[in-house]
Length: 155
Ligand SMILES: CC(C)(COP(=O)(O)OP(=O)(O)OC[C@H]1O[C@@H](n2cnc3c(N)ncnc32)[C@H](O)[C@@H]1OP(=O)(O)O)[C@@H](O)C(=O)NCCC(=O)NCCS
Image 1 (cartoon, helix red, strand yellow):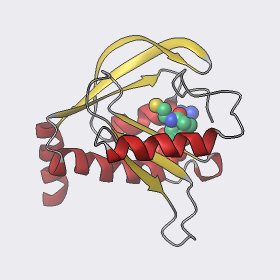
Image 2: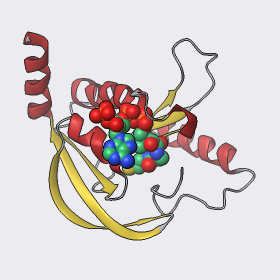
Image 3: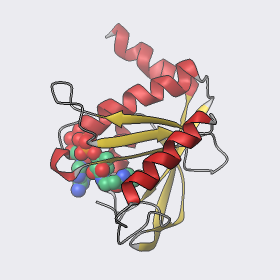
Image 4: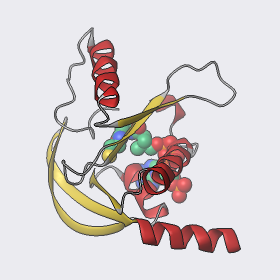
């Protein structure tokens, strides 16, 4: 679950990790620094099963981040969530682009970017919970996103 997350993710996870993290998320959101969405099942009981966020490009390559509880992997849920969050970035925030980075070993995360039309910019390195790893840096421009969406709507 955590090995592909950024190195600052506390691990082993402390007993107060979730509470501390959610509090920090709410504070950053209140200050308008970062945008967070809880992921819950449509027909579920509102239990948090994952999280996705957007942040301005102060931290290059890290404008969108996500994780999902392992038992829900492989159902297309994060693709659905990321589609909605991309639309928020481009339509509500009017961001010109989203740049993200992925550990090369994280095939599921890379596949989501590929499906959404992100273009591979360059290869570098990043620091993850599992260590320093080869990293792919990606970008999706608003214009390209709008054009793909138009294509999909007209089919
Ligand atoms: C990455 C993560 C969010 C994916 O969530 P998910 O809901 O399972 O993703 P989706 O089902 O929407 O899409 C995953 C895609 O990757 C593909 N995939 C999954 N594992 C794969 C693998 N080992 N090799 C190639 N493709 C793979 C799936 O088939 C799917 O593509 P498809 O729709 O073309 O079939 C989830 O695995 C996770 O939370 N991982 C731990 C945290 C993390 O890595 N966060 C991202 C940091 S950048």
